[in-house]
Image 1 (tube, chains in turn cyan, yellow):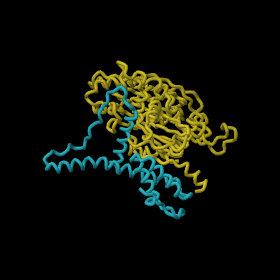
Image 2: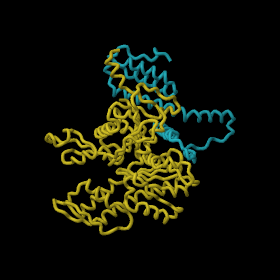
Image 3: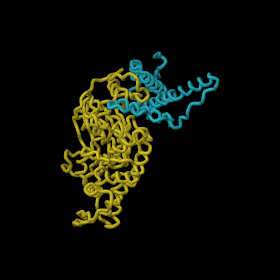
Image 4: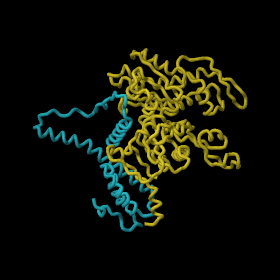
Length: 138
Length: 385
């Protein structure tokens, strides 16, 4: 990704929210992919290009909007990807295989009986549920 | 770039799309500020705050603070309020009831007054970190099934106060807090996080939650907007009907409830001394208290049976042995035995309901602090300051 592709308006007194939003979106996307150094670099770019009088609340709002959009997009990919792959595989198998079971009643998460249940894993479960909920609400 | 610009932008902390990238690499921290972990039970009437340092199991601060903010009224002469403060919090606000406009930031478990909530959280931050410079990472308890708007309200009010947050349903945190980590793996010890049902009766909501070794789904949790405050209101209406113009304040009625609450068959007499119109009176409130508290049973029992029915059939017998009541409602006399008897009478297999015990006010916060200690870097949600 080149920095020139993410350039903000040259005139800092006329900020364009859409440009800021695009850069915020790229930062969120990089973080989601685990590309932390690139995210940090883009963050520096964003900061250096922001006009000094740019409203922090506006920036916060833009960032949160873009964060949500990235999360929603990733959720969609996560949900749609396996479905499309399955459909594609079914088609390739001359439509002879039965359709996948309805997702209307998704299975309950597997119960873990270990005495050393990891809290971080449970939090992961919570975040995945939140993500799915936001995805379905979108 | 001017130094002024640098100063401004250095305060900006970008939120991390942690939920979208649970496996992403940890975000690089840009400063070396001291980190304070906070377990926070933001309750409708009382809040509990615990703090600790990363990498340690010690609790540095443990406080229970009434969730109220008192804005000092205009015209109060100098010296009446300590330090001539304009805003008071918690016990101090209650002690100066005559001189402040008292605001409860929460109602029914969710934020009802944003400005007051923001002020209250700022106060909490000052308790957690007197230096004002530490990075605060807080796990905050929220009612089971709190919707996105309620969560967003907390985030908005915590912005600029906490640096990173995780919002976790309260009954699940209660289970984590109730778990005795030192006994994990011991024969005979049933980890409450593995198979239990928690009933957390607070001021604004009663939350029930199945905890069965995975993070509870929405279907595993039920939040009922009937709890301590609703009991107070029923009592107030009933007392008003029998003793019109009694002048009893909401705080006095809550105090009466906390001293005399019970469920089950009506107990009489329960004589309570009150001051009305400057004169001492003795009111017999056995009926009033019993009716109001038994309404709670009527509300939560259907939710309890619904969750038991919903539980995995493999572990339901063990589950019935591990039903725990916590929160202020656990102090209602007879609540465990009445619910247990109702389950028995309805044919449930050997139910056993226990009370969380004397730490009932702190379990959510204890669980929250455990979660804060265990959370991975990429699980925290950043708040933009």
